[in-house]
Length: 251
Image 1 (tube, rainbow, N blue to C red):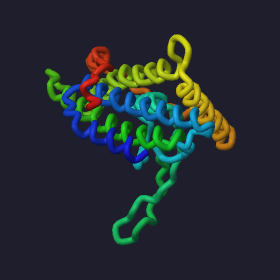
Image 2: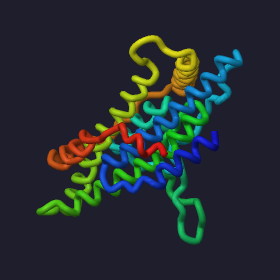
Image 3: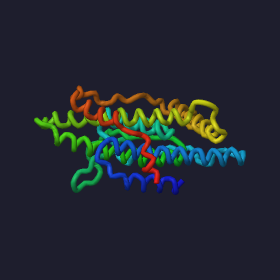
Image 4: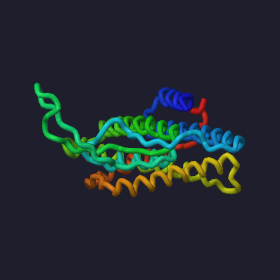
């Protein structure tokens, strides 16, 4: 598992992303590496007659918690998790705000954190990919905002950047999810290795369904501020031109 994650980390570190197209190409390349690993594991399991060794784990998708659920971040979590065969949900976490000189005894804060379940390697990849895309999308939105004339200020600036991120994230993550679906359910007969991978995914799905029942999970509504249409379309247009081929990024 560590070898696969190291390859993906090196891939993303070398990806000099200056626009959403390049960020998405890096995500797609990482996704293909993950698929190759899953097929290799499936092939070994099929020939040995044993189950896939990669265990199902549950961890936090991100080390951060958030005061509110932004639409673009919720969409990003969905797309990344779906793209790497994982499931996520929002968990309410309560922490004490620090008070100077008194330590952690201040007012209690209710934040939301992202919890994820999946095969260990898929989960670790989703964690790394989420943080990478979260950072990149925010940076790209800021760069695009600085080119706007006239530039909206104060709350208008926040609205503009959020709208851009919603547009860009929607296209990028929809494509990641679609590629995952094509990988798991190709046209024609599935290979023996892929059948094993499909069974493994079904096990992850079943564990998640069980956790939903145990925890009484329900959807948390994301913030729904009216979008800036121009910013949204700029972000969406950038995502529409993403090429998920980028075979050169696998080297």
